[in-house]
Length: 91
Image 1 (spheres, rainbow, N blue to C red):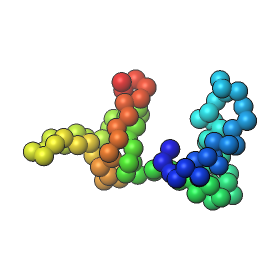
Image 2: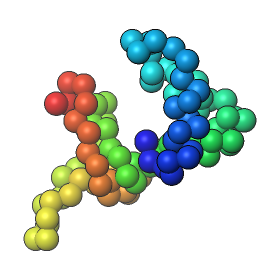
Image 3: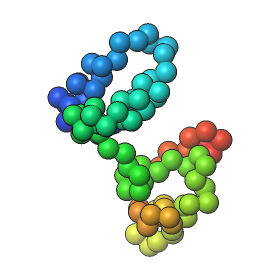
Image 4: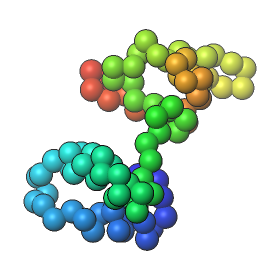
């Protein structure tokens, strides 16, 4: 999550489940509710401008080797994400 503390606090205060319940499903359901999404100012990084998950997306990214440093580029969106997450089998 990225956001201001009051907004994040309002978001996590909606959790009324056990610690071993599915938190990803919970946040997905919040996001899919248009009214809640608007009230809580929720947004997804659809174009990987900040975050790039690699699982299922290896064909979408290239590593650019440049003199000032190596970077990952999302070739679909043209974005240069700053956080790369090697999740799932891509670890």
